[in-house]
Length: 377
Image (cartoon, rainbow, N blue to C red):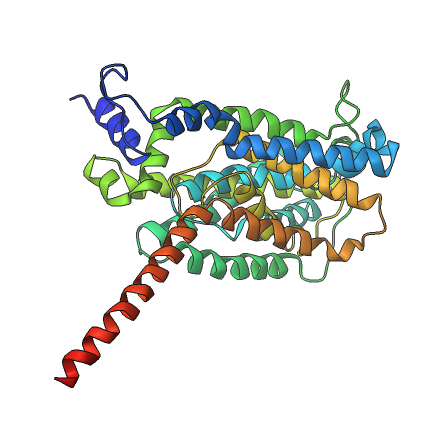
């Protein structure tokens, strides 16, 4: 079999098994299964997100008619930091699909912002600044990838460590200083909507373009099948000839570059370079990816789901701003959605484990009298 065919077969098998043969030649399927097959498209996670998004829109419109105005959509829904968070969910999605995680995304963006401010402060050419900042992001991501793939450390522990390390470097670069004298042309990108799309920020438009590209790679290319195969079963993927370590290293490097780019966009939007830019956004990024249907255990996820999850998060935040909801309590919403996005997809597995535990308890109770009688003899 050709390597391409092997990769496709492995990815298909790991995703749930290939269906060989003509379905008409086998035994008649159960009626319940036929109905389940017909309803399968309606029961997909993305379908639930569409329903949730419609509910959020209805809630926002019911709260205030201003919810659908161009100015409000730009300022509170599709503007602000929404596009920047959405951009960071793209590499996070790919990394989680392979069974890893990157909690240093926000710190990398903050480090990029600090470096950018420092270089502007010392009058470097703007083109050189962009290149240096993006290279810094690549190095930061590659360092994560090296520790995870070559040293063999758990990605959770590694990226918690580099989360603190990169934030410390950001503080070391600028200290308590700030820089807020950026060219007007660039800062306008962050505060003005896209021409012809008065409700959308440039960051969110860039996210849409990148999401389309990443979606094509993930769902329509051998590389995408490789990522799913790695996340479903790392050992089997290696046996099939997939270069697991190199692939993960590339993903972490890509994550670093994207997050550095987010740091640039964030700095221009705020017109301020400071060491605590993007502080605390890593959990929102993870929550959004998981709400999009990406399995925390790897091997599952879609870019469409992540796109819908970003819209749901943005819509919920925008709708709550129109109410008397305390803005400082919004992390409660984020945490709740994070828990639900982990519990709901895994509910069947949890229910199966509970049933097995209860069955074991029943068997033990039934066996206890027999054991006691045997001991009495």
